[in-house]
Image 1 (cartoon, helix red, strand yellow):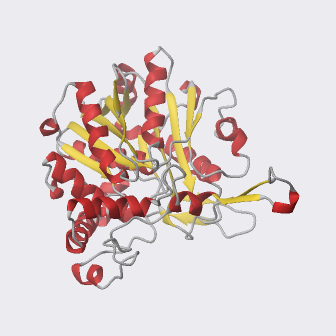
Image 2 (spheres, helix red, strand yellow):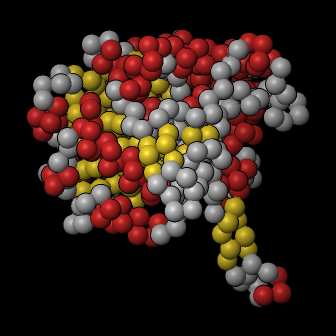
Image 3 (cartoon, one colour):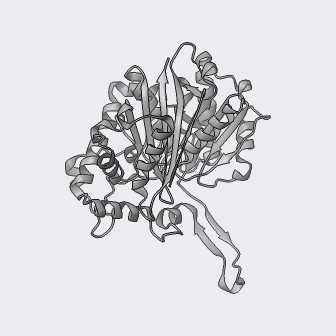
Length: 400
């Protein structure tokens, strides 16, 4: 099942797409609430880009991992950003959260509302332990759940882990360990190439973090932390994560912490804010769900739904990026669509820089927009899988 939506007169100034560096699970951001990440990253992004906070009429907060005081997340964030009269929805749709937030903001702008600020933030490190009183009585003890680890390891509908869905698709399609390793090496090479010239490509959209903490030293994060280059030799030496499986630590992403944001408004206003610079037009989105325990397949129908809504074809896309927590995602997408593996993810992808969940998609959309800018504009497609055998896709157009 898939559905698509088209957007009219909705855009983002290119410079109003931004992301923080991502830190690997347990790294520099492990003790920082994602709400604090959101405040620090968004404050710096708005200041550096000269965005008038008084012009912002709404806020969409995307998150997937509960943090202290998240019940008041959107209103607290707005107040701490100096916008005490601004509010809006909080969205949580696993790895599809970023596209869901963009969809929400675009729909709101489409009704005539003013600029909508999107902030997506997550900290998978130190995820919460939830406890509920047992409905059967105290003698059975409370019901407990580790929000992050238990969510990764079991879908309540299928009883399968996310890794199991990747292994199932690889087995059905006949993809080998060598096929997956080759994807990981390619994506690593693409990410490394994007770091050339002292990270010139990333510096245009990446916002460094500096956060003072009461109980810990000040956190300063200026570049991705914990990315491990992958070579054919290093990939071949890694053991399979599951006995008899084909995925290794190199061919699946790592949990991470980070924040990303965007300012969605009308196309004319975006051009005004861009000061004759490029804008990113939101064209269409697609959401899809596939058969149980086959999550990596969902990228394809989500992308097709977005393309159908926009009346476009895959071959008209000038750049394509994916959220690929498993290397098999890209192999399946390439097989089903005919898109060459080396034509996707030209600046790297979440397989390398990690997956904080909520902001992962928005970071990838941001990089996609800057890849399009480097070629002089054009149409781009983002598609990425999400928990529950689902996926979300977005088509953008970068234009002056």
